Length: 414
Ligand SMILES: Cc1cc2nc3c(=O)[nH]c(=O)nc-3n(C[C@H](O)[C@H](O)[C@H](O)COP(=O)(O)O)c2cc1C
Image (cartoon, rainbow, N blue to C red; front, side):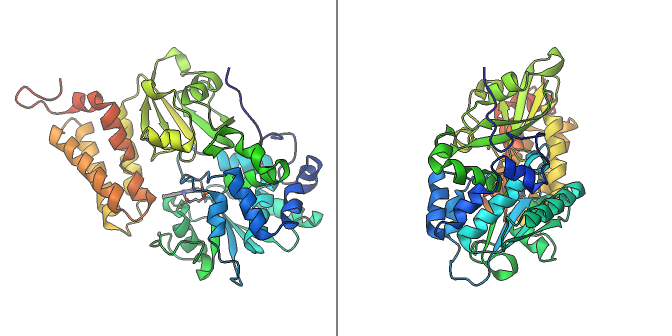
């Protein structure tokens, strides 16, 4: 029977998440103490050795990202991405509400590694209560004297999905409209206010105290070798236990949904699961034995993304669900680049046509062509990933599309 493996959330509901003294009692801030006693290069090597990869979606090696920051730059920033705009995702909120001090400690460890004494937390616009909690947590850590000269400011986000993209997030902190920048230069070289900046996800930072205290080898030994550690997944939709779990990264989707999640609710049959949030692929039953780690999911043509797991039962209309998703992307496209601005509009238009029973095979071909162009030509991950739900459902649930097509000369839907 598959089981949770709690590291970041071991003391969930047992300590006051904002209270530094509570956190210190269960071993908190020992990792930062250790980090401060190390040479920055050795600290970055330790994080690299742990194999920690970003938990915000792109899966980039954290230590490697930090190593790109020029050590001799006079000012550098540590930015935490708590935008959490991906529908169905709430793991970063849970980390803050259960163990906010681990996030602060992780950011300070990053500060020690890159030589920065200023951190910012960019918090989802719909989470004002989390900003309040984080402000209390920072005050409490300062009162305990554990942050030293590292300061952290929690900021309210602008409330747009695209602001979760790291360069749009940086623009937004600077007070500009949240639009992605062209890369390179990457934030590690030219980020917030033009200086080297590390942007990591909440969960990525929150792993660091445990890596420092328990050792890189310990972390590297948990879960999938190439994407080690634990992952917090959030189950939503037609599943019995619609809640969060912290699991080793080699757990399979089937174990997550049917063992921890208790399976499909109301005695219905499973139809599909969408992993990684709204931009994730839809996965059929036959592929559920895939481990959730970044590479295994990628090899299957899906993505772990933020770790959101949306379960759909047999009664769900896939084409209708994907049509609604395409409306979301049309609404959230920032409009800066053509492939995304026009592409998300056209995807929504064609999906609605098919969903309303007016589509043809040609429309499906056009959707696939659009998808190719958007994945290659859009400026940021929003436009690149927007057609993935369409692509994956045409691949695995083509019959649901065919059923809705206009019947022409004896061919097509029936
Ligand atoms: C449209 C879009 C939205 C994103 N939203 C988030 C988000 O809410 N949280 C997050 O951590 N990363 C998000 N990302 C990924 C970030 O750009 C970036 O890769 C991440 O913050 C890096 O942190 P990590 O390496 O620790 O994962 C988003 C990317 C795109 C393209």
